[in-house]
Image (cartoon, rainbow, N blue to C red; front, side, top):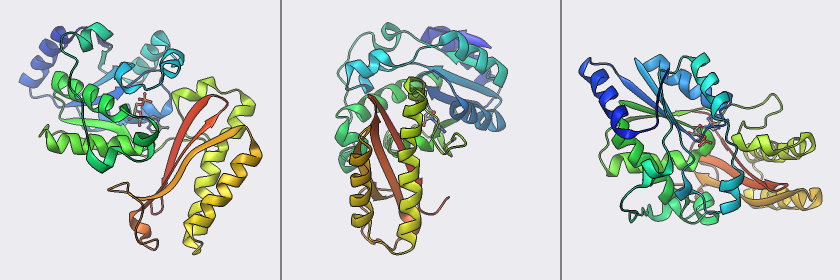
Length: 283
Ligand code: AMP
């Protein structure tokens, strides 16, 4: 695997690949790689001749300094995993490489980034859009791969791709879970065994809600029940639990519009913030 820490040598390398008409797939990550990330690498390898993964913990998307400080960093293990998976290129830049010069651009996605994650993490999606724009410009991939796990992020990036005419083919890869149902996340590394059991609250709440909704139970009742269960549990602090339209992420207007419905949840387990989601009808 070729490893680049600087933009210009990477650009030169990729220019050669493009000249040889090789298709390029990009998988952006923040490292501490797990099977969810590897599913994205596999999806890219199946469709592209060159797969490039980036590992960059982007400071502008963190609205909480402690979260940024505690984010797991494990470069050597990540490199091994990428090599085993057959990833062709790793781009692992420093902050100075990514953020030298002006730092004035911000993004506003209207109603899309004011709800859910955007509401609880002000500025988060502006930082995501900024770093993804930089990566798209540096790599100029044919295709880029993201996880359904960060569902709202994918909708924001889709809008970014359309508005800025990047013309990159975007792919959303289904959520990879542990056998228990817990969605894989780099942040899970900060959970002990008991925390992991408590963290099942997210998946269980989503799965139960889906069944109850399909049976005709109003979402308001389901949500109140979930809030009560979280309070009783104590170790779980529910931040939001919503039923939304899967395209706009605004409240689902017609509760019987199951094919457009998605449930999204965020909760703290100990001091670790976890998110998960579930489409009412799988795509
Ligand atoms: P991160 O390193 O957390 O920024 O994630 C990098 C990419 O991997 C994002 O597109 C995530 O949505 C995706 N991802 C993270 N966890 C999972 C998972 N459990 N299943 C599928 N994709 C995931």
